[in-house]
Length: 168
Figure 1 (cartoon, rainbow, N blue to C red):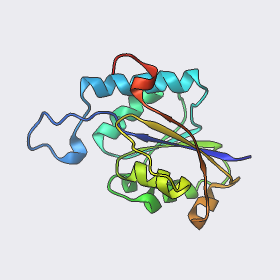
Figure 2: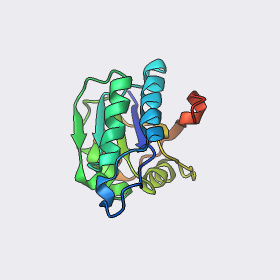
Figure 3: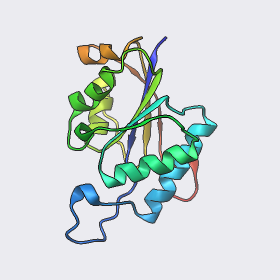
Figure 4: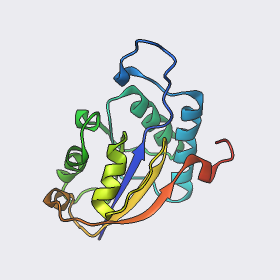
């Protein structure tokens, strides 16, 4: 059975506190709303992942918390340091050791890596703004095949908060 990889860019971050380290920035009110909106969308569209892997950055963790609560995700949340500042190989590597267990995995991270994953998996440039979710169908039955760097997927959807709510 093909695997599904969801890639979500963290929601809109708050730049309002001067001197705060980048990793410690939280979300703006709009970002909090967007993360929740995207979680409700995932629930409505039956796109709730089997596993969520998230960057340790505060804005990514806050996005994940709101997204997961809204989509009623009750699985494990894994925080991977490589999702903060890591590139495509690091992101896909965080999934490739899962074997066959999960059918669908969501990575919650940052740009430019979210856009680079889309390019790597599909050969197409995709502009990924905050709180966007990309869904890739992958012709693999074991996540370890991602590490072989020969996997080409199909971008089955690209959803933005303003696509599903008038609040944006």
